[in-house]
Image 1 (cartoon, rainbow, N blue to C red):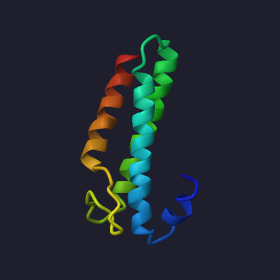
Image 2 (cartoon, one colour):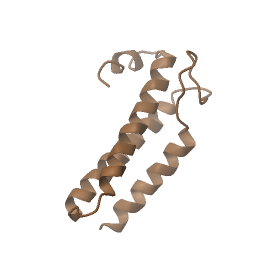
Image 3 (cartoon, helix red, strand yellow):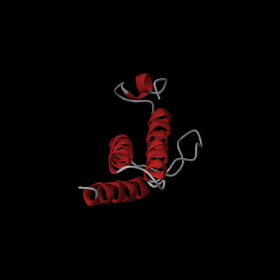
Image 4 (cartoon, rainbow, N blue to C red):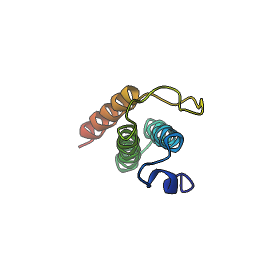
Amino acid sequence: MVRVEPLISTDPADLDALYAAADAYSGLGGISMAEAQQEGLSIDRRKSHWTEARSWYVQSLKTWRRIEHPNHTSPNSFQAGDPAVVAQELKLSEAALASLH
C-alpha cells in the first residue's frame, strides 16, 4: 500500500490509484474479517481482527468517496470492487464488534 499512497495523496489524485487503493483496502478488510471468523480465537484476538477489518473498510470507503462517479472498472480497465459491498462489510464488522462487548 505504501507505493500507492503518494499517488492518492495528491490533489487531484491519480484516478487509477484511487481505484486500486479502494479495492486493496477492502481486500485487506476481507482478510481481517476471515481471520476474525476463525474458530478457537480468544475474544480479545477476535476483537482485534474485527477492529482491523472495520478500519480497512472505513479506509476503503473514504477512498471510494474521492471518486466522483465510482464504477466497477477503473479508467485503465482494472476490475475494482463495489463501494456498496464495502459499506455492507463495514456494517457486518461493526455488528460483530458490538456483539463482543
